[in-house]
Image (cartoon, rainbow, N blue to C red):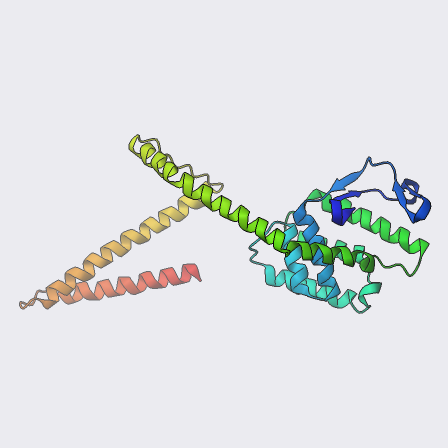
Length: 271
């Protein structure tokens, strides 16, 4: 149900389950239920296969996919923490790991990096922990990771199937065609608004005082650079003239001094 339909019972305790003929399970009381997007299902599939292969990179990338984070500056640190988690839990074979506990710890790692998680994932964690415990009480040898791995492999195969790839290529081409079609009209609209004086730029700054202070410092530096440049250029012109002019060497020395001082100030501020 989770991997095929992206829907799950979020409170699957024994009181909400009935065993029917032919070992079919009937669930009741769907007052607490959850649904998963396609990206969340792909996260589960990649996460499970990453555990099966003890691949910290695959697990880390699946966690970032869950958070809808394509570029993450702390990815190396995230992967290191996942690697440490794997080394602690994967002393046992894949069949004997506590899947819900590892998933819960992975979510805590994500939260330490201040990444946002979809609310349905917390319901899913609760549901999986309940199912895993319930199954273990019925049969000690039952393994949730073993049971769900075939579904994860099927999802991965569907993701890279020719039909799925063709659909993604078609959607991409359609987006580019829309861009090509609409681009000239949007450029014309921008140019028209510029001629009419209707283009406005809205900059929202949370720390206005910091921005104003930084802008003032930049303005001061630009002014000093401008004056030093004029001083150095003027002194060089005077020195290269045939007739020696008194004070030219002093101007050049002063401009070099101020240049070195400016470089020193810039270096100490950005250090």
